Amino acid sequence: MSGSVSPLAPKTFAEMPAVRGVRMATAAAGIKYKNRTDVLMMIFDQPAAVAGVFTRSKCPSAPVDFCRKNLPGGFARAVVVNSGNANAFTGKKGKEATELTAKSAAAATGCSESEVFLASTGVIGEPLDASKFAGVLDELARSAREDFWFEAAKAIMTTDTYPKVATRSAEINGVQVTINGIAKGAGMIAPDMATMLSFVVTDADIAPAALQALLSAGVGPSFNSVTVDSDTSTSDTLMLFATGAAAKDGQARVEDAADPRLQFFRVALNDLLRDLALQVVRDGEGARKMVEVTVEGAENDAAAKRIALSIANSPLVKTAVAGEDANWGRVVMAVGKSGEMAERDRLAIWFGDVRVAVGGERDPAYSEAAASAVMKGETIPVRVEIGLGSGRATVYTCDLTKEYVEINGDYRS
Image (cartoon, rainbow, N blue to C red; front, top):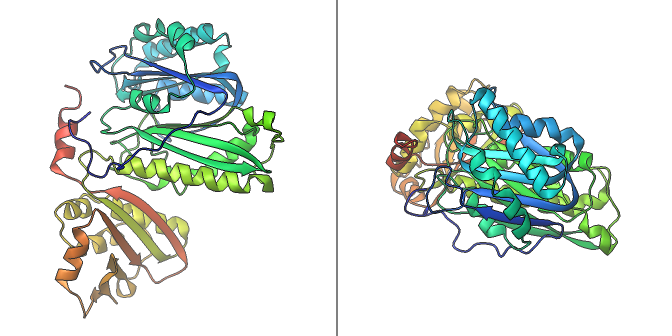
């Protein structure tokens, strides 16, 4: 974790209420970091419905494999997360570490290993000594508390400069339910599950299949629309749990994601996912500015997203933002290399409200002073009109600073 907190960090953190049916505890096991918590355990009093979305990396971590195996069971009793070591590319030892952790967690909570979910984040390729924290799980299970969300968010940080928390409430058929979420991530973040790790819990009573459909749809405009550095992690894991405790208030169980009773819940969940995803971007390693890239008029939405990502992932665009240079020529370059349909003479580009290019050339009314003023802001909106269709997408990124190179140049030391 770098010494200073990102200038884009929230000015205040959400007050996190307890969510009925889940308790948490953390421990300092010394996996990589000294004098800080690095293990989180979540315990569900009753089996909670579970949904998950994971990295599309072809080199997934051992915990991702483990979660994928257990997910079809549909229910969770315990989650164990460690930071400092990703347990990725660790071969047979990695599998053994997940087995030991799952066995210890199951024994500590009195559940089956198929109801345990695991996540690890940190260095890739280093064997994880699970015995370091397997021994503390009994104590964590005993000491777990409901009101521990902020501490939970701290325990899963790696190079993050602040813990990421969000909460929302919604009504399902007149019954009030709560949704809480935590996330970690600052680098190696790009779509195809761009969160590194995120855990969201609600006390709503929703069946696993419906929960999965809600989550799979919700990641599109949130976690799969953010990029810090175009690198997709081996460990990306986003899980959503529903404890069902709201059934005591008379909330009837919802079996289908298309059920109209989920109307307000869906909006609240999607809003929370976007909130967490943007907190991740705003903590991009070394970031000083957030960039919001909107592409309109592409052939279709998928094309618009690919063009937007081409712009957002361009080191030349990101370094221009870092230098507060309104170099719109780099945006033209990124559109041109995206592989999607674009016609040079139909392009128009805006920085904020300032149109800098139109009709394939610099805007006749272009003002360097006006464009430069936009670049001095904390959030830089970039909008590109392709002029070919109705496809639209927005993605979020941050600038690329010298500090990013410093953080990643000595990450393992």
